[in-house]
Image (cartoon, rainbow, N blue to C red; front, side):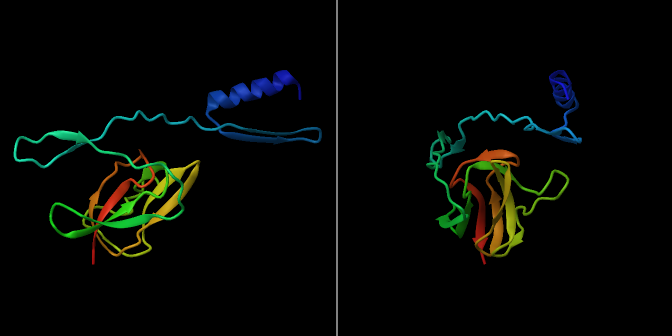
Length: 163
């Protein structure tokens, strides 16, 4: 295969949207693979209302430090209702998905009962899809992240009221 033919093949792949092609003949073995287009996320500060006697003011929410970890962290945190709740936090940096694919229903929604070990979401990191499991049984009180949004390490994903 000539260089010009290889270039033509690469141009063809880029125009058709194919991500991978394998060609094998007696004289040549060719494997062409390209990475799909990367999504670029623009980060904007997250604003949360503060509780005050005067008209409500807004303050930026602080983000946690970045560090790798392999298991979801779950910690207790009181919420405004006075009930005990537990936060399911992100164990890694990545992209948060509420379902296995766009056509599937969400793993969990507000009001759903979850059991320990049940998958609650997926976080994509470096082209790997990591299932995040609940470490507590209870009821989902709040979903803190929008679908397909980037998440940081230790960011709260769900608020759960334990059984």
